[in-house]
Amino acid sequence: DIQMTQSPSSLSASVGDRVTITCRASQSISTYLNWYQQKPGRAPKLLISAASSLQSGVPSRFSGSGSGTDFTLTISSLQPEDFATYYCQQSYSTLAITFGQGTRLEIK
Amino acid sequence: QVQLQESGPGLVKPSETLSLTCTVSGGSISSYYWSWIRQPPGKGLEWIGYIFYSGSTNYNPSLKSRVAISVDTSKNQFSLNLRSVTAADTAVYYCARLPTTRDWFDPWGQGTLVTVSS
Image (cartoon, rainbow over all chains, first blue to last red; front, side, top):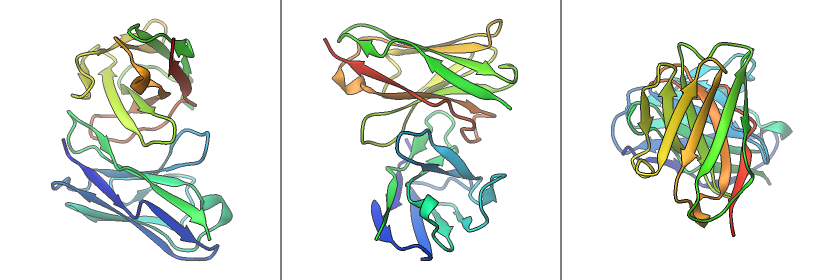
């Protein structure tokens, strides 16, 4: 299986901060990388697909980049509603889809 | 727009079979892949498996020996059976659409908590 490792596992930041979350794959996955946001008690919500494609309705302060093994999710200016847990997910290996362990973004 | 809704028992006894159904509304189940994903309390997401509307399946290797996913196109539903459950299978179970096997999960159902306990 392709292992997905996110860093950091948790992060404290303030409203207005620029935040970057990293996701590293154990082998090259081209750009088959997706990002989700999950708030407590809610289902995950797709933010970015194919490494950098922002989903309709997702604020432009969210952006994704990367290819191969290293990917980043950036929030340019944190808003109160952005405090949540973020997951990356690879879809390169269609026989074994895997997620990162999650990054919990908390208010400082 | 397409919406998904999980249904099934919230409590299952150890060694028994966990059975859940996902009902798709607002669109046809045809032409897409449909998946189950779970999340133990306080933990991360684990992909369980997916099924194509035609019936072909693929499962997480770690669960493959206990999992079966089926589809009923006439009812616009797909189902999950997980055999021989233990407390480690306690989780929120989500169903989700996967446009192709190399795509992303969207949309998701709201999730349903299944507790394995005697």
